[in-house]
Length: 213
Image 1 (cartoon, rainbow, N blue to C red):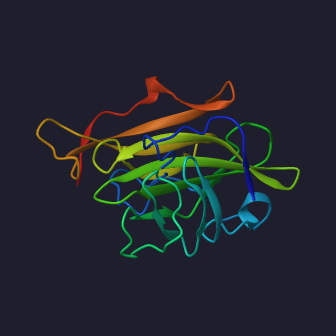
Image 2 (image 1 turned 60 degrees about the horizontal axis):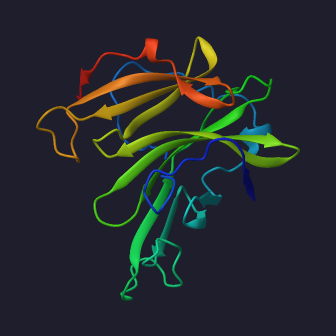
Image 3 (image 1 turned 30 degrees about the horizontal axis):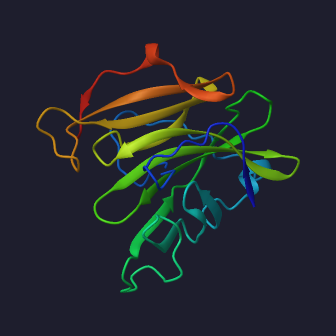
């Protein structure tokens, strides 16, 4: 069971979170992921095979990094399965990438940084990054970095800053004039740090817009 504290904002109106991100190929230099240490703490949790709460929807069970389910007219979990031809139900999916690890909140213990994507039917694919920690043996959600829909702010890659273990590095799609929502022609690199109990972008460290390879 995952309890949530701190910032858990919705990405899709009436549907809630989306996340983090990944599986999307990104450009730029390789980024450290700090994932080679022995399994302990958050590293011992199988993040690609567990239940995740999605705000406005409910808990979904991810298997091998993916959950397929159906939503009713109110955007809640429906009784039917994804792909069922039931009036008023929409097929949806939630995917999570392999996590990266860092002590994001500076408490001396590693946190899990999980990029995920929520597809709510149609072409919309809403990304975000969710940050989890262990508190008293329970998984809690510390906060979230919101992404966007595919080319429109969608998260391409997530890593941790090799020179500062608590900073999260996000590569984000940015639509240029004339781009369609599916296909951004530019992207930028962002650096997110922990401040006042939530992840905050270090705007001064924001990278320049670069062409998508």
